[in-house]
Length: 291
Image (cartoon, rainbow, N blue to C red; front, side, top):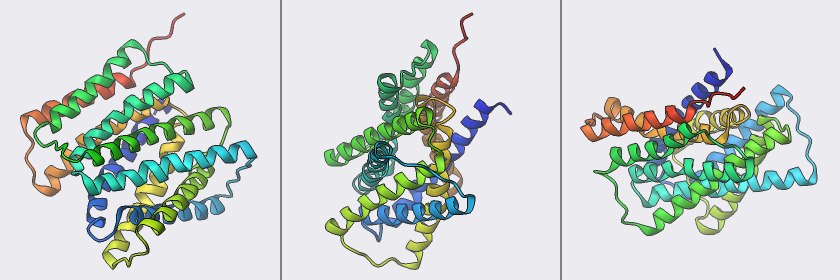
């Protein structure tokens, strides 16, 4: 299998895991406040990565400048992006949150052009609005924009996530930082930020056995494993190409709803899925090299 195709397939696996996270998070938010829930999830996940790094004997050498980068990456990618996403899910329906997060690819594209000088080809540019049109077509009958605060929170979450992806790509491409160390340290720092916020805003909360099961699954598979894989993939393909794969989450959520929630797929939903997939495929296409 070609390395490029392998990276894309690995990215799709991660987006599938994150698609299932929405369901688990919604269940967890029934008993836990958003920042506390996120803080426990990412604290446990960073601990798991720490244990994995000891087992694999992965080492990372930090200097003052690199340490500052890690603090910024942790704050943007976990404290803001993930923390605000939990808050957004507590304020808005999961459908609306999923649609708004489709704009992340545009944020990554713009930031990547400015800071990474990674420029898509003309055919790839077409894929971005096509995928967004597909997301709107898919969700247009069920979108609810009734909570301005929730919309603002999710947009800030998306912008922070885009900044995180571009920074991770930059660090791994230019500083040769290993993915395990980068994910572990930045996630731990981001989790610390979430713990501080949750302590002052929400306080400590008891967690039921059901809540712990959700947190353990999210922390182990959907966080420690998935975030490590995502950052590892950013070594090999541009950030904008990986980011657009997240738009396939609406396709995955739709299919999961049909199989597990007995929901019905409408004509608009099918058209939306086709448009999203077409857009994602166009962005994955490479321009022909000039001799």
